[in-house]
Amino acid sequence: MSENPHKAGFVSIVGKPNVGKSTLMNALVGEKLSIITSKAQTTRHRIMGILNGDDFQIVYSDTPGIIKPQYALHESMMSFVRTSLEDADIILFVTDIYEKHDEDDVIKRLQHANVPILLLINKIDQATEEEVNEKVAYWQEKMNPTEIHPISALHNFGVEQLFARLLALLPEHPAFYPKDELTDKPERFFVSEIIREKILLNYKKEIPYSCEVVVEEFKEEEDIIRIRAEISVERKSQKGIVIGHKGEALKKVGTQARVDMEQFFQKKIFLDLYVRVNENWRTDQKLLRRFGYSSE
Ligand SMILES: Nc1nc2c(ncn2[C@@H]2O[C@H](COP(=O)(O)OP(=O)(O)OP(=O)(O)O)[C@@H](O)[C@H]2O)c(=O)[nH]1
Ligand SMILES: [Mg+2]
Image 1: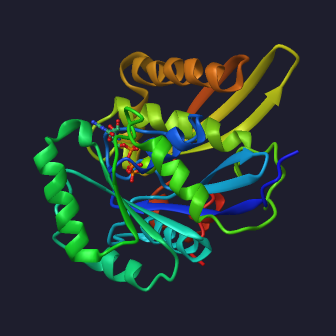
Image 2: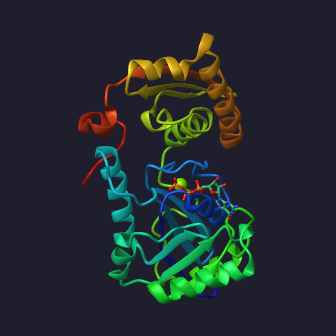
């Protein structure tokens, strides 16, 4: 048994789209929980990743990139960011070396927080030392956060040191969740996210943003998991694109998703994919609720 007092708390990972929030959460938790692509707005939910030790529990929350909402889906995404910030004992404000700081909404919002803010400058593997120093000076001046850490989430550079700082700043508290729990989300959620990741990777322009995935069936048998999932698109023309010539495009998505699912569940997967038109689901409150988005 450990002699140390038990520490536990919520660490909220926030920032603009595409800066590497999900990459960082996966690196901190040591599991691929969040999907990652080079497209903005990959993450649409608050996804908890729980890291447990004998005398600590860190509940990370990966969140959607902060944007000005353009439709109801965005509003729900931003409400996930808001509640994650409200729960936070520590905020990880992720920026990257490319970020242009043309609007200050986020910064203003964070300045009201009364918990430590660790500002991370990510992707330093793609910058010179001079550029990194410039960014550090910029953020020091602009925001004066509790701490600034240059990191590379992708190459695991600075992540260990960041973790040590989080542990030091964490309040004394008993665990919030059972110690063998890794996330707050059910298995079906990860199935739909893996499919969404392959959609983001395989289609262009507005297609990925018009798609949502719902797992209709998840049947675990002794040596196989049988999954049926439905991809919703907003218009009939999009259905054709997602399916592709002779079904080739959808088949590719299915194959790529299955490989990842077999890795994730460590089990053979049978995956059946369908496409359905749910007109303008991104602005339809009823459909959004069915897809797991709420705007509280
Ligand atoms: N070179 C480099 N690329 C990185 C690093 N961290 C993340 N990336 C890349 O940046 C892109 C976005 O990463 P994500 O982790 O999906 O970013 P995010 O902030 O979660 O994005 P949203 O969910 O869309 O808000 C991906 O292509 C990552 O591979 C890094 O340290 N170095
Ligand atoms: Mg993300």
